[in-house]
Image (tube, rainbow, N blue to C red; front, side):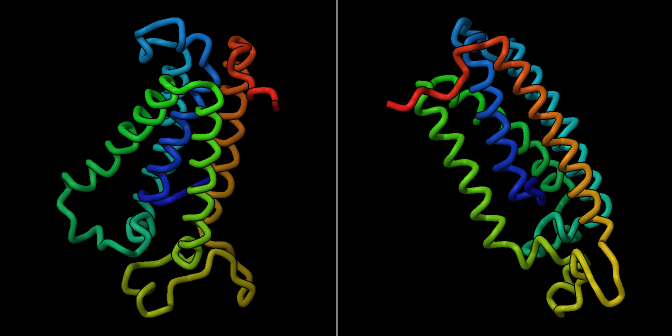
Length: 191
């Protein structure tokens, strides 16, 4: 599960893509894409499965949520709020873009989105697996996610691991339910 504001925007976009694919039969039948079950379930998932975790992590460690690139204390409150509004915009963009694509192209977009998120997580791994203030990170003293001396696991890492796993499982259940209602959503057959 992606975390931090920047990676979560990609996750929100990707969730929009997946919910549009899973509900593609229903989505294709109506010009009112935002009134479909796929959109409602996806938007609910975005808030309960992504934003709730992100806002909790932001309350615990805002410096980490900005991946130590931005000092959140220096940001106006409006910019911080806008960062979380962008989650909805990214989800909406992923959902509506995918709704307009052919099935094969939609799956390609899903794969490219997943690859981009994974590449960004690998690139930012030193920032993702260190927890502390921006000053601690810059000084090299931010706590590692998992430490062996003394043995410990950072609170933020526990939250990401446990809540992230529950969130992904919930998304999988919702997507499977949508796919069962929309046989058109299955991946295209290999030619």
